Image (cartoon, rainbow, N blue to C red; front, side):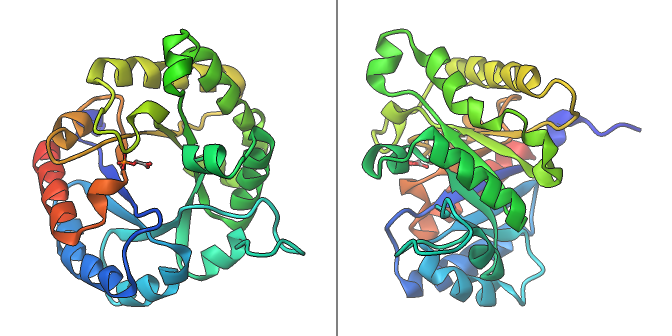
Amino acid sequence: MTADPSRRRKVMIANWKLNGCAESVEAWIETMTPLAEEGRLDIILMPPALWMERAWSRLAGHPSRVTLGAQNVAAWEQGAYTGEIGATMLAEAGARYALIGHSERRRIFGETDEMVSRKLACCLAAGLSPVLCIGETENERDAGETDRVLKRQLGVLEGVASLSSASALWIAYEPVWSIGTGQAATPDLIEVVLAGIRSHWAGLNATIDIQPRLLYGGSVSLANAASLIALEAVDGLLVGGSSVDPESCADLCRSLIRALD
Ligand code: PGA
């Protein structure tokens, strides 16, 4: 019997950015672990890197579906790169995933596609699953350049199949105009863009049978989360501002679990 794909497990990634505190990591995990044992929702916490091990030791006793990811990773494995944290270090601290190419990293910290490409290679070499973030700015959208921008950003994935651990590849569509603005993309736009990403992926890596998991992020909230996770094209949601407070995030996850039931 084949599994019904519409009943597949989906994921909620909590990207805390530069928020929270050491105690709130523990409160969040206490609140979220029981939820992760119900329903079809996997939960990934991406705390500030400093608290990764703390979160990891807190989770160690729980046979739950809460796992950890990093918000960023160095573009080099090791060396004279003051302030950076390498993929292997993050993996040793308990991370299984890492965001690469988040628009805040691109825009505020000047990260280029070349650096994103190096980060991708570092993640795969360290056994971290990369979550490649792509998205167009408001100006690019208004100029009709969305497709061109996304294809350029997806270019880092060309030839990724030569790396054996590419099976756990994730791509998050996060339009820059929707991040932190309260203006989520419409379901129609998300469906169209994710379908475009899938077909572009197939063209980039035609010879391999790997299907990246596709996420949406940008102003996901309690008001829209259930309808977004229900979209067939969406494998999960990347949530920033609405994910930090444990009670609010738990309410959001409950609405996702109900929507997936
Ligand atoms: P937001 O952020 O949910 O606060 O819009 C999402 C993200 O940047 O990943």
